[in-house]
Length: 55
Image 1 (cartoon, one colour):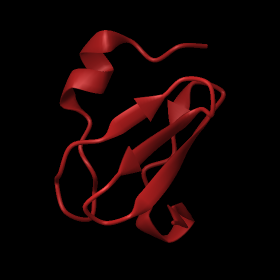
Image 2 (image 1 turned 180 degrees about the vertical axis):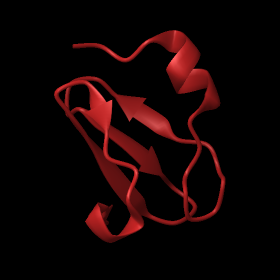
Image 3 (image 1 turned 135 degrees about the vertical axis):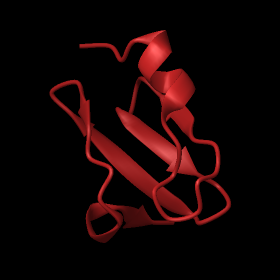
Image 4 (image 1 turned 120 degrees about the vertical axis):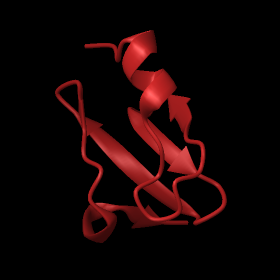
């Protein structure tokens, strides 16, 4: 399930409120400032800082 463009336009990193890069292939949202990657599970972004992957 793809994320809607309207949702992508308003989503920000919960840690720094910065922009997120959407990777539809990997089903992730990435914040390059915080170096955190948030998963998208069944079309729902998991925007919990504690659940994010550090890279």
